[in-house]
Image (cartoon, rainbow, N blue to C red):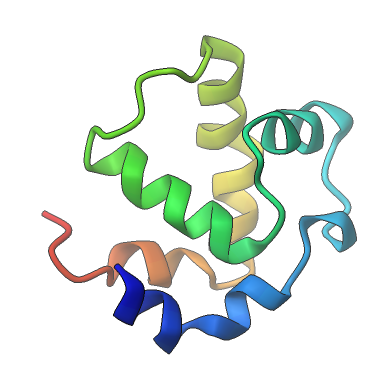
Length: 87
């Protein structure tokens, strides 16, 4: 994953603080230690690979709803879909 992270370093420079998320979505990400768009990409990749099981149902609702739609609208979803090794 480090090569992927190096290749898309610019995503880690985009703070979620500037994204205008709802309080629920913003709080959910902050509780998971998410600070940047790159961190959200990493989280989606780990969720899709079944590597994260500690998230709560409200967190999954936010990730599947507002945040995913925002990723699609702003063309960040392609980084999740194009992750090497993603089935």
